[in-house]
Length: 193
Image 1: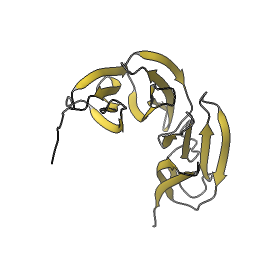
Image 2: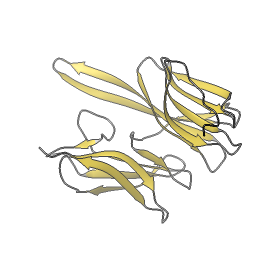
Image 3: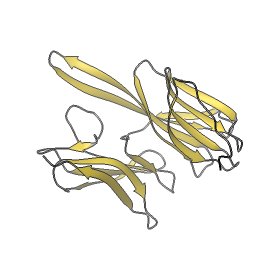
Protein backbone atom coordinates (compact mmCIF):
# COMPACT_ATOMS: atom_id res chain seq x y z
CA UNK A 1 0.00 0.00 0.00
CA UNK A 2 1.40 3.40 -1.03
CA UNK A 3 0.99 6.00 1.73
CA UNK A 4 2.03 8.95 -0.43
CA UNK A 5 4.22 9.88 -3.36
CA UNK A 6 5.79 13.10 -4.51
CA UNK A 7 7.38 14.27 -7.74
CA UNK A 8 10.24 16.68 -8.37
CA UNK A 9 10.80 19.01 -11.31
CA UNK A 10 12.08 17.25 -14.47
CA UNK A 11 15.58 18.75 -14.05
CA UNK A 12 15.96 17.29 -10.54
CA UNK A 13 17.66 13.91 -10.16
CA UNK A 14 17.42 12.52 -6.61
CA UNK A 15 20.40 10.34 -5.69
CA UNK A 16 20.13 9.71 -1.95
CA UNK A 17 17.61 9.81 0.90
CA UNK A 18 17.76 9.63 4.71
CA UNK A 19 15.10 9.57 7.41
CA UNK A 20 14.59 12.75 9.44
CA UNK A 21 13.83 12.62 13.19
CA UNK A 22 10.57 14.48 12.50
CA UNK A 23 9.19 11.48 10.58
CA UNK A 24 9.96 12.90 7.18
CA UNK A 25 12.95 12.58 4.86
CA UNK A 26 15.86 14.56 3.46
CA UNK A 27 16.74 13.79 -0.13
CA UNK A 28 18.85 15.39 -2.80
CA UNK A 29 20.88 15.07 -5.93
CA UNK A 30 21.54 17.34 -8.87
CA UNK A 31 19.50 19.81 -10.90
CA UNK A 32 20.13 22.14 -13.82
CA UNK A 33 21.66 24.71 -11.44
CA UNK A 34 23.97 22.40 -9.47
CA UNK A 35 23.44 20.35 -6.30
CA UNK A 36 20.13 20.43 -4.44
CA UNK A 37 18.67 19.03 -1.24
CA UNK A 38 15.15 19.13 0.15
CA UNK A 39 13.31 18.09 3.30
CA UNK A 40 9.95 16.34 3.04
CA UNK A 41 7.54 16.00 5.95
CA UNK A 42 5.82 12.73 6.94
CA UNK A 43 3.17 13.32 4.24
CA UNK A 44 5.71 13.95 1.48
CA UNK A 45 5.25 17.73 1.33
CA UNK A 46 8.33 19.94 0.98
CA UNK A 47 9.44 21.69 4.17
CA UNK A 48 12.47 23.42 2.64
CA UNK A 49 14.57 23.28 -0.50
CA UNK A 50 18.21 24.35 -1.03
CA UNK A 51 20.27 24.66 -4.21
CA UNK A 52 24.05 25.07 -4.47
CA UNK A 53 24.71 26.53 -7.94
CA UNK A 54 27.66 25.62 -10.12
CA UNK A 55 28.54 26.18 -13.76
CA UNK A 56 30.38 22.83 -13.83
CA UNK A 57 29.22 19.22 -13.77
CA UNK A 58 27.90 18.57 -10.25
CA UNK A 59 27.37 15.38 -8.29
CA UNK A 60 25.89 14.90 -4.82
CA UNK A 61 27.89 12.26 -2.92
CA UNK A 62 26.06 11.90 0.39
CA UNK A 63 23.55 13.39 2.85
CA UNK A 64 23.63 12.62 6.56
CA UNK A 65 22.19 13.71 9.88
CA UNK A 66 25.30 14.47 11.91
CA UNK A 67 25.75 13.69 15.62
CA UNK A 68 25.41 17.47 16.18
CA UNK A 69 21.94 17.47 14.57
CA UNK A 70 22.90 19.21 11.33
CA UNK A 71 22.15 17.92 7.84
CA UNK A 72 25.49 17.63 6.13
CA UNK A 73 25.81 17.14 2.39
CA UNK A 74 28.92 16.50 0.35
CA UNK A 75 28.81 17.46 -3.29
CA UNK A 76 31.45 17.80 -5.99
CA UNK A 77 31.97 19.93 -9.07
CA UNK A 78 34.11 18.59 -11.89
CA UNK A 79 35.97 20.39 -14.66
CA UNK A 80 37.53 18.72 -17.66
CA UNK A 81 40.95 20.20 -18.45
CA UNK A 82 42.20 19.57 -21.99
CA UNK A 83 45.74 20.09 -23.24
CA UNK A 84 45.80 18.99 -26.87
CA UNK A 85 44.95 15.28 -26.99
CA UNK A 86 45.48 14.94 -23.21
CA UNK A 87 42.71 15.56 -20.69
CA UNK A 88 42.22 15.37 -16.94
CA UNK A 89 39.43 15.85 -14.43
CA UNK A 90 39.71 18.36 -11.57
CA UNK A 91 37.15 17.84 -8.82
CA UNK A 92 36.40 20.21 -5.95
CA UNK A 93 34.47 18.63 -3.08
CA UNK A 94 32.45 20.67 -0.57
CA UNK A 95 30.69 19.83 2.69
CA UNK A 96 27.69 22.01 3.56
CA UNK A 97 25.98 21.90 6.97
CA UNK A 98 22.32 22.92 7.23
CA UNK A 99 20.08 23.42 10.25
CA UNK A 100 16.85 21.48 10.74
CA UNK A 101 15.14 24.44 9.01
CA UNK A 102 17.49 24.25 6.01
CA UNK A 103 19.52 27.32 6.98
CA UNK A 104 23.20 27.37 6.00
CA UNK A 105 25.42 26.88 9.05
CA UNK A 106 28.81 26.12 7.53
CA UNK A 107 30.56 25.32 4.27
CA UNK A 108 34.06 23.94 3.82
CA UNK A 109 36.18 22.04 1.30
CA UNK A 110 36.64 18.40 2.24
CA UNK A 111 38.63 15.63 0.60
CA UNK A 112 36.38 12.77 -0.53
CA UNK A 113 35.51 10.43 -3.37
CA UNK A 114 32.08 9.45 -4.71
CA UNK A 115 32.29 6.23 -2.66
CA UNK A 116 31.88 7.70 0.80
CA UNK A 117 30.07 6.87 4.02
CA UNK A 118 29.34 9.06 7.04
CA UNK A 119 30.72 7.51 10.23
CA UNK A 120 28.99 7.38 13.61
CA UNK A 121 31.48 9.78 15.20
CA UNK A 122 30.80 12.57 12.70
CA UNK A 123 33.60 11.80 10.25
CA UNK A 124 33.68 10.02 6.89
CA UNK A 125 35.40 7.15 5.15
CA UNK A 126 35.89 6.85 1.41
CA UNK A 127 37.51 4.45 -1.05
CA UNK A 128 38.88 4.26 -4.57
CA UNK A 129 41.98 4.07 -6.73
CA UNK A 130 44.60 6.67 -7.61
CA UNK A 131 44.53 7.65 -11.28
CA UNK A 132 46.76 10.31 -12.86
CA UNK A 133 43.82 11.77 -14.80
CA UNK A 134 41.89 12.51 -11.57
CA UNK A 135 42.72 14.58 -8.51
CA UNK A 136 40.54 12.36 -6.30
CA UNK A 137 40.23 8.61 -5.86
CA UNK A 138 38.53 6.97 -8.84
CA UNK A 139 36.17 3.99 -9.09
CA UNK A 140 38.28 1.62 -11.16
CA UNK A 141 41.59 -0.15 -10.71
CA UNK A 142 43.14 -1.55 -13.89
CA UNK A 143 46.38 -3.42 -14.46
CA UNK A 144 49.31 -1.32 -13.31
CA UNK A 145 47.25 1.06 -11.13
CA UNK A 146 47.89 1.41 -7.39
CA UNK A 147 45.94 -0.81 -4.96
CA UNK A 148 42.56 0.04 -3.46
CA UNK A 149 42.85 2.93 -1.02
CA UNK A 150 40.55 3.51 1.98
CA UNK A 151 40.76 6.84 3.83
CA UNK A 152 39.21 7.75 7.19
CA UNK A 153 38.43 11.39 8.08
CA UNK A 154 37.58 12.74 11.53
CA UNK A 155 34.77 15.23 12.16
CA UNK A 156 37.11 18.11 11.26
CA UNK A 157 37.77 16.58 7.83
CA UNK A 158 41.35 15.60 8.75
CA UNK A 159 42.80 12.25 7.67
CA UNK A 160 43.06 9.86 10.65
CA UNK A 161 44.27 6.92 8.57
CA UNK A 162 44.91 5.97 4.96
CA UNK A 163 45.27 2.28 4.09
CA UNK A 164 45.96 0.46 0.82
CA UNK A 165 44.82 -3.06 -0.07
CA UNK A 166 46.02 -5.10 -3.02
CA UNK A 167 42.83 -6.90 -4.09
CA UNK A 168 43.77 -7.65 -7.68
CA UNK A 169 43.32 -6.06 -11.08
CA UNK A 170 40.23 -4.89 -12.95
CA UNK A 171 38.18 -4.15 -9.82
CA UNK A 172 35.55 -1.44 -9.43
CA UNK A 173 34.28 0.19 -6.23
CA UNK A 174 30.55 0.92 -6.10
CA UNK A 175 29.89 1.67 -2.41
CA UNK A 176 31.23 1.61 1.16
CA UNK A 177 29.42 1.15 4.48
CA UNK A 178 30.42 1.23 8.14
CA UNK A 179 29.96 -2.11 9.88
CA UNK A 180 28.57 -2.74 13.39
CA UNK A 181 32.07 -3.25 14.81
CA UNK A 182 33.27 0.14 13.51
CA UNK A 183 35.06 -1.27 10.47
CA UNK A 184 34.12 -0.82 6.82
CA UNK A 185 32.81 -3.06 4.07
CA UNK A 186 33.43 -2.14 0.44
CA UNK A 187 31.22 -3.39 -2.37
CA UNK A 188 32.28 -3.56 -5.99
CA UNK A 189 32.70 -5.83 -8.97
CA UNK A 190 35.33 -7.49 -11.11
CA UNK A 191 35.71 -7.29 -14.88
CA UNK A 192 37.01 -10.32 -16.74
CA UNK A 193 38.19 -10.05 -20.32
